[in-house]
Length: 465
Image (tube, rainbow, N blue to C red):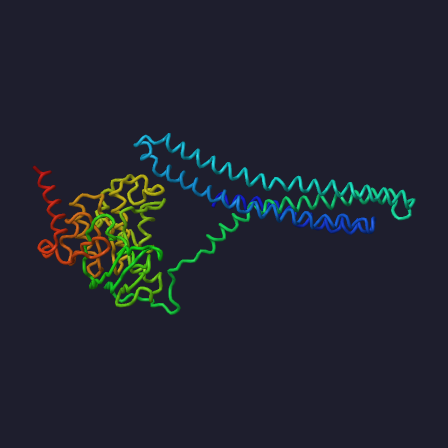
């Protein structure tokens, strides 16, 4: 985007300087050439179509070349961003030289494409010079012939000199316009790419007559299947039938890639189902106004984000009108109050961009407190206590039960201890619900759940020993 906008800015600056002056000078010079030279000025008119045709041919060849250059720029920028984000991984595996070579190869590829594109565009200058000097030679030859044969009756030396001056003005302004055309050719692809971003519209929109109130926190999945792309061969979720009453606590367990997060992301319409219906409060989620639906659902993710600003300012994202007492109560329930008060400025402590000056567990607890302030009808915790110890995790769950008892709580976790007291536990496998029930029921009926439970409890016993 930065490169594209810089190209557009350069084109715009050139256009506003010459868009008025050059066309006016071109028209007036042509008129005066006809006034002074009569039919001899037709030589300047004839050269214009030749120039236009040449410029169109150059543009036709240059546009695909520039399009290829910008695509390669995208890949180069993606590589740079990836290396910056994964700097520690690159260093940890001593892959600096490999990444340098990869960057060098990408940069060399851009250089070759850009050189090829510039070579095509560079033909503009010799074309202009050829037309300019060929035209001048023709005017000098024909003008001199008319002066000699007519004895100055048809055209005299003064008029001839003026013709040359106006001809130079015509061709110089044509050259200026052709330069603008070349710059616009270079920036046309940038304009198209920026336009794609500005004109992009989300497929997730509110209906024409949306529902503006969520009755309760009940959630129903009826024959739901989902895949991320229409071209995908495999469904990420398949044949999900699930009914959660308002106020229930539901735990979700499953291995990596079992689509636990995908399941809960259908509730606030971060995605729409491919097949089937998701209902909240007894109504299809697609019938709600998007803002209303998402205001009723609070999500706390494993990778939490805090914004630059004070702790209070971050927490008030959950409720902009929250009082200091409400903020402190939410932090106590999320087990964040103690460490916040340990900071010199307490709740007025400044959080750096991305929450760089707090630990992962502290970020998670602050984000849970932020969600509690929202007092949603549905609270989704997507592995959001992974960075805290089991005791703190237990205290947070107790706080949730006491503070928002009527809120439906959906907890995705890797630890059985985080969900064993839930009203309903789902075991996900390969995008389906492999088993569902309470902790005791699943110990009897689900081999997957029983295996995970035994591994974790045995691991804990061995650690204690």
